[in-house]
Image (cartoon, rainbow, N blue to C red; front, side):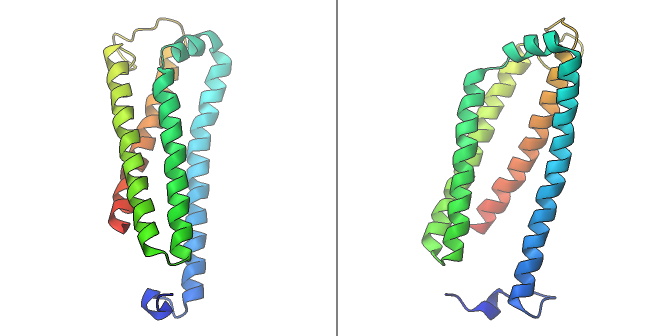
Length: 168
């Protein structure tokens, strides 16, 4: 196991206190993400209840293959990140690096596929605004929420790829 003192950073005087603070920080971050994205999903649920036909029409325009493949990629990248975390605890440096590189690659694959999906949506005029392709009430709201949520996720993903790449 690596020397514990070399892992200690300012302002901490003990590694267990530093680890506790880092763990607490991660939980605060996760809670803030849950509240933020949970609020967006609540907005989605409310408008879906108000405009069920428009949301159904808009949902039929989404490409199920992109969503299915990206879900599998996202879950696999979560697995490789969990492997990296456990490998770090066990001090398996080579496995940590391998799992972090795999996580970054899966994140990149996700972003590339999302880019193809975005291009398809743009070509089909599914971006809210003038010339929006679906006339059913509520369909434009569906895609507004879709673009906001997936756009914010893309920003989070990009930051995550950068941090994971820097760590490996």
